[in-house]
Image (cartoon, rainbow over all chains, first blue to last red; front, side, top):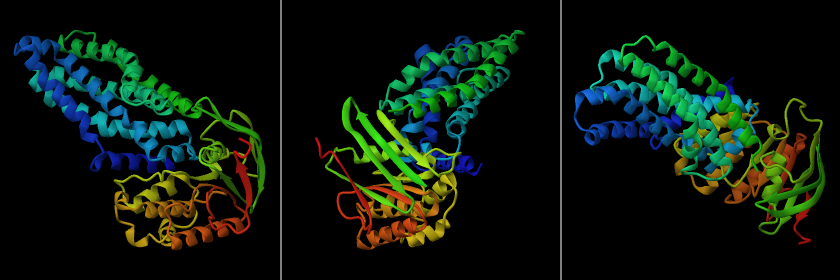
Length: 221
Length: 201
């Protein structure tokens, strides 16, 4: 247990300290959402209708932006070699890193979303629903992102490879996240169905992501 | 405890680095790997650490902990020091001693042993190359593992650092540890077998 808590505390510390990049995702999210009304026009009814989709797209892109560094930083300074030689179960160590990463870069997006929702004329009830879907859905983005981040490190290709590999996997999360938000916005009775599927996607990613990432490291050349 | 390597071959990026490497190492013994640049000294260490997959051959450890694989019983000191510049010297060492476990000597004592006690609260970003290497040596002492895989351990160390390294290696061998080191010059091992890589090429 102490190995996992040590890793968790270290990654959180690194994210918070100078140069950690915990704020990079939130800043990018803010930029995407504030630019949107300038591009679309200040039509309040339209903004209200597509607001949840904009927030979800912004959160998805912001998540992808920060995923690149999840293992790359540890690889560059040699920490990854030692993490792989640790006695802790590798899958769980990777899941620990992902949890710390989500807390430092995913959770701030969830917290920032209601504030940004005001820019998009989303009422408080719908905004609560969007924040709830982001809370349920952004962990799936991080844990699915583990696969791309691990492959990019083992193949020694950085940059665009992570988004290209991960984007197709995140499409279901985006679809059901926006569907649940829109259901809440339209006050229809179908909020529960897409929201349950979104939760299921997250739960599945908790298993698939760490196992696939560990397999990528174990079979690396 | 006995580490044996039989007929090991390494292939990197489509190029055969070495083939047919065999040696055996018993408890309390050290082996120095010698060879020109690119002869595969670092690759051999990474193969033993389990960080690379062999193209051919076998690496076996007898008498170790059967629950753990070889890499989990080995220290690897590579070209990179595995330090986070944003964390202090103490935080870096505490993390590795907690993550790698089981603990050897206390982290504070290990810092004193490596001559870094006064720098414990300094962020690792401000360390010189030699001080970074000393911090890695502190890691070897703070975590107890029977096999040491050292890649050019004396590089960047001053004469007092090299003396500390030699003392630590001597102590490790007396306690029945194994050392596998890649080196160009002398690293202070008194009795050490030698393995030459790449002479046939």
